[in-house]
Image 1 (spheres, rainbow, N blue to C red):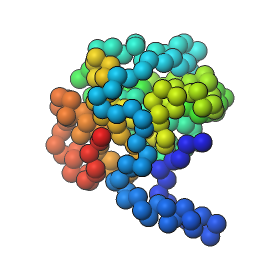
Image 2: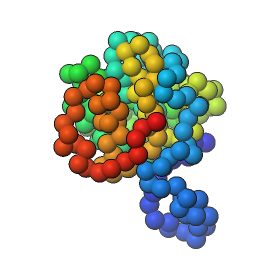
Image 3: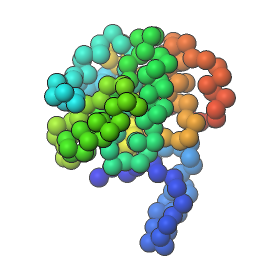
Length: 199
């Protein structure tokens, strides 16, 4: 099972050990959760299924600057990051940027329920890994993802440009990675807060 990046206060003394573990990890330091693939690697192709039942392949986005987000409906930080991803989608689609959320380690029923309930809020492309909750899912088998949400910024040639793990309020790491890739980003966006650079 994946670890999520949730950083809320503990509600039970049984979670005290987790608190000490989290204390060693700063809010802007996700180095312990970096996936196997890194900047410079080629992004492996895989197929997921969109809400209408159509296959979505990573190869479909060749020539685009792709924000690939691995997420799950049961992951609080994944759900919390959705408004930010929608903002990225709305702000930069005109600059050849595509946001694609690949639902991983989740059931098809949970995915379809979530998408249907949020179809008016989130308009970026999503699809579900048909492997479901299995170690052979693309996020773990192909990308070596250790925690979700994890985003990969993938260049038009299919090469990974940066990796972003976790989600924080006011997070601007995706925007910084996009700016590094040549996307015009309003400098005011970065006034929201400082975060560790994407790897």
